[in-house]
Every structure is written in structure tokens, then in C-alpha cells.
Image (tube, rainbow, N blue to C red; front, side, top):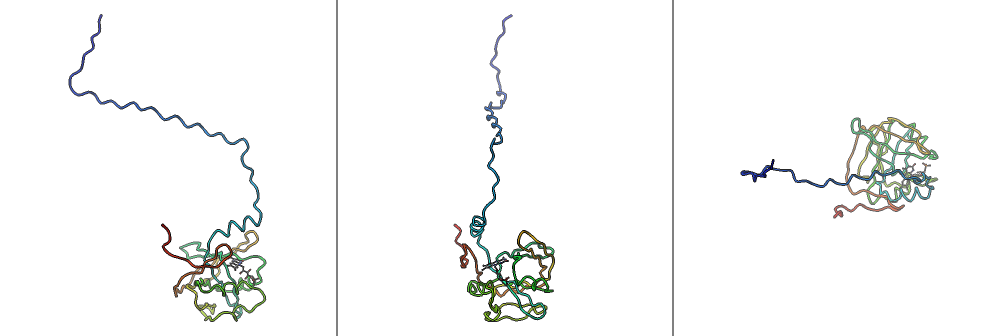
Length: 199
Ligand SMILES: Cc1cc2nc3c(=O)[nH]c(=O)nc-3n(C[C@H](O)[C@H](O)[C@H](O)COP(=O)(O)O)c2cc1C
């Protein structure tokens, strides 16, 4: 029997175009010798962290009526509800034992012209508050430094030993926002923030 082929009238049935399938990805073999996990030296670690530009704050308190304070860049927000912030203090800090006794502390966010104050509050063996142009007592008598762009008054919330530092977490109970431009710290140098330079 002979088969005849007919040209079918009417619409040509739609056909899916035949696409060549992408080549299946070659499964990656785990490297036979993955790079070994090595420890970074303190110098390498410091250099890497120096690339991180940070705002500068002075944490103050007044346990027993004596004002104490130290400069930190480790200040950060932790939680919105409840409002929590934190900073880290070196175990070797002479200020921390007094600070941890306080029922209230303040984080004073420094303005760009307060670099000398930042340096003074990191200096040992001086009366840090004597170098301060002025301060006033906030909630619970906590020192609020004149000229700062923001003050966050906190109640101690938690502390934890982390490596060679203490993590101090505070619950924010009051804020004041005088405003202004922030002081930044980058590559061991103080500087200013320039807005609108991201093209
Ligand atoms: C810009 C800057 C940021 C600092 N940040 C921190 C910090 O986050 N935590 C800390 O423990 N020390 C920090 N320090 C060092 C302390 O301010 C300094 O070691 C401390 O004030 C020493 O005095 P003390 O023994 O009375 O605490 C910083 C110093 C500077 C200049």
C-alpha cells in the first residue's frame, strides 16, 4: 500500500520551537585541597577593621556622683522594640568598673569638630571632664556633653564577656537631638562626613 502525504489546508498547528537545551552545568567538585583556615595576625585584623569608617561616641556615667567616660567607635543599635544599643569595652579599661556600677549611662554622639574631645576621652592619666568645654546633668544625673549631635540615655540591660572585650547593652530611655554633622574615624584618623558624593 502506498502512503500519500497531503498538504493539510487551514492553519498550521502551532508547534513549540525546538530549543536546544542548555548544557547541564558541570557539577563542581569540592576542591581536593581547599584553602586552609588560617588565623589572621592582630596587625592584619587591625588593618582590615581600619577600613571600616565609624561614628565616634563618648559613653558617660556618674556613679556615686563622679563623672566617668570613654571614647568608643563600637557603638551600634541592637533592637528597635525594645530600643537597645550596645558598645564594647576592653577588659583592660580602667573606666569600665565604674561604668558598670552606674544605674544609667549616656552615649554622646560626637560632632565633626569634637575630635580633640574624642582623643582626650581615650587618654589615660588626665581629668577628662576638665578638658571638656561643658556638660550638664541629664536623666539620673548622667553627663551630657555640650556640642554633641545626639544623646541617648540608657539603663543597663545586659553585659557579656566577648573575647577580650565586654559587650554592654543598654535600653534607651531618653534621647536628645541637638543635630549637626558627625565625627568619623577611619584609618586611625578623624574626619567629616560629606553627603551626596555617591554617583
Ligand atoms: C576613636 C577611638 C575609638 C575607640 N573605641 C573604643 C571602643 O569601642 N572600645 C574600647 O574599649 N576602647 C575604645 N577606644 C579606646 C578607649 O577610648 C581607651 O582605651 C580608653 O579610654 C582608655 O581609658 P580607660 O582605661 O580609662 O578606659 C577608642 C579610642 C579612640 C581614639
